[in-house]
Image (cartoon, rainbow, N blue to C red; front, side, top):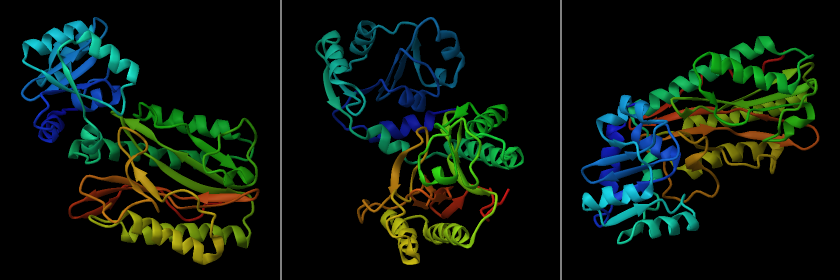
Length: 357
């Protein structure tokens, strides 16, 4: 992916006293350069950018989109980086204080005498929140693969299957259809275990009742995230009422979610509906979170949000209310939403009516 637009935005956000930024977080290195590698460094200067790697990656780096904006070296020693930046007149170097350990920073200081280090805070994370058109397209593609996986798994599920088999089949299908990997450890829990919001699949046959599957994949590094709860076997009136409550809570929140709307209010709308229908205390997590190169990032849709926390152009968020009754069962429904300056776009296409298999 061409990351020239992102580089320009990072330079605009750099404090005036900062000559360049040293990027050590591999996710941020990919975000800024468009090149996926490890054991190297990325530095963003006011006018130039440098990528320091080694023999294993140099051919691929020179053939990548990074070659447009970066001077690329096949030397990754910090001493070589130091001399390169000195020759470029860099004196005040930003560092990722939210990523670098104290030990790593101390070793870098020792290896770069004369360099003044400045913490960058949320310089990169703050920009990552606002997705470019190219980033949004990657997320749409990842979600399209995830939707296709859900359609596939409905024909795969039988009472004889295990939770582990279903989780593996979801990941295998997504990888076969263009995904790089699952975007997180897939949640697949059945019967009484469906009351565990982040339960782990087990190598046991499905327990009759609700089956909750929370899964996603990455496409060009960008994540998707969705949850669907289906039923295996008979569904009684209480189970149907619980499912319908979650579904309606999500519908109300999705009707509200839009550009410049309150993150706190989105959560409150879903939470109040669930509480008013007799399930107070059974929705124990936040309504949603941002999605991008990380599966959980800003913004958050949460009771902890402040009045100034609003949805902005470029945000990508989940909307995932749930009800969990310990020892009985649980339901969660999760969609992804892209926020534009002209509105909101729901990109999850999978059906949400209660499917009984």
